[in-house]
Length: 365
Ligand SMILES: *Cc1c(COP(=O)(O)O)cnc(C)c1O
Image 1 (cartoon, rainbow, N blue to C red):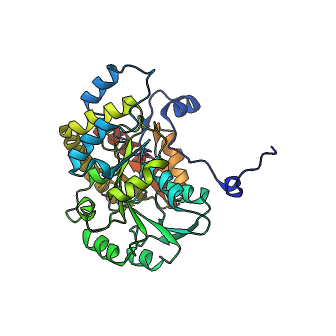
Image 2 (image 1 turned 90 degrees about the horizontal axis):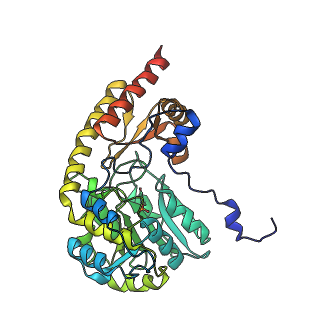
Image 3 (image 1 turned 120 degrees about the vertical axis):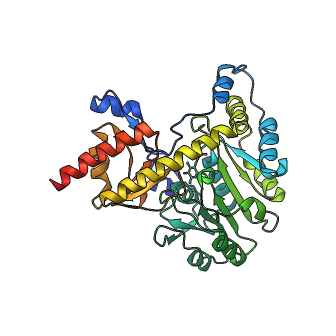
């Protein structure tokens, strides 16, 4: 091919998603396959969402690009102003827009390693220098991250709780960090799993927005709300910042259906509460299981566990795949001796534990 890409494009690798169920069924000739690989909500989504999907109409008309009704609903839910919200086709798209707006080859961006892959991927496309600060025992090292900031730094990414480790940074740590960050550096708090957090000292970043105009919060409907397939996420920040970003947004980036579903999902907080409780119960069960079997899970405030399995994660991934269970190998996530397993339904987790035990017993035989 003779087309001339940006030099960086030749180095990019496509995102490796969790393997889809249908693909695994076909490849391995399995009848039943469960997916615990992408941190989706195993309980589906609210029944009121499903009703919205059935009542869908008017695909010939463009969506409301401003997402007015959804905007009102989210503003009301979070108690922020409508002008403080920016919607994206998933928070993934907001990450892309931020990089596009702020990063150039002359700038740098600071992030943890390992963390969510899309910060690095999108920053690389803009040619920015990527400064990675290793996690300390699986947790963001905010002191070292603050030290890494220089005059060319534009964005610092805090994935809280962190994907793939599941750990979180506390209010005290986060506040001390914000005090150190210069006001011309944007801090992004990616809270994709915020609804799952149980810890009392998880930062209330919404309450900090008045103090820090350089703080931006990312939230999504893909995880707890169970709308990963519809693609809606958003940023919350100072109006001045949001209005700067708004012109970069593709005009019709969230669909009519997704907007309606998101409103319905937001209005069913009983569903959220129920999923939260189920997740806590099942997470405890899985953590106990791993500890008893001699594997150490990282402490998790999310709907997934990163577990040290003592051998290369690819091996455990393969062994489980052949038993009809899709997890993520830690290999591609920066934790080669780990697997990342999403917390499923009670039945799925039992199936997982049975298969995992079977594998462990074979190793010890
Ligand atoms: C899943 C995830 C996202 C992206 O979610 P969208 O589906 O694009 O809204 C963002 N950040 C983290 C840390 C995630 O795990």
